[in-house]
Length: 182
Image (cartoon, rainbow, N blue to C red; front, side, top):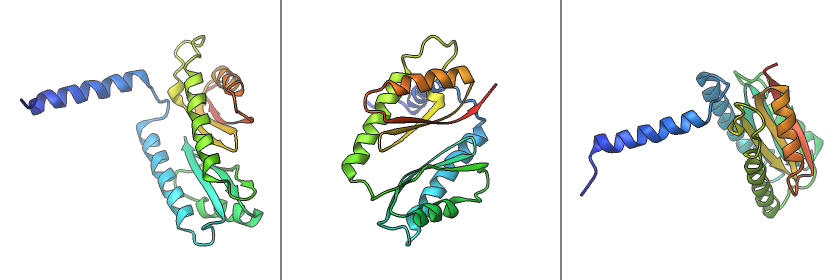
């Protein structure tokens, strides 16, 4: 027997509301949407630049109008070109270029970085000493064992997040790209 459409819709709505209640973004809805659109556009722009093809591996992250570039570029000129490619997008207040000048890392390195990001996200769940802290407010990106933390946090929250991230096995360095509420 097939469940009725209203019942399916109700269940989906309840799940969505439950997810929303456990994660309260401090950015407004329009900012969240704009950040996501900027990230997609910036990544596409970098991927479509023929001069960068095969000579860089760059990831993007955007939070509250701050565009973060991470990864590797074979030369300083390619690193700068990537930044130039994404500078000037509407809704971007600042570009943080953290691209390392080095040979492009193998796929195995990128998989290790993804696993490290997951371990840091999981570790943030242990922050229970801060009333109202939501680890979902922290955007985490990783390249070469360096963990980049973004979010709109209080200084106390940022310090706690940084401390937890530093103690995760495999983290080489923690880079704070936070915006502060206080």
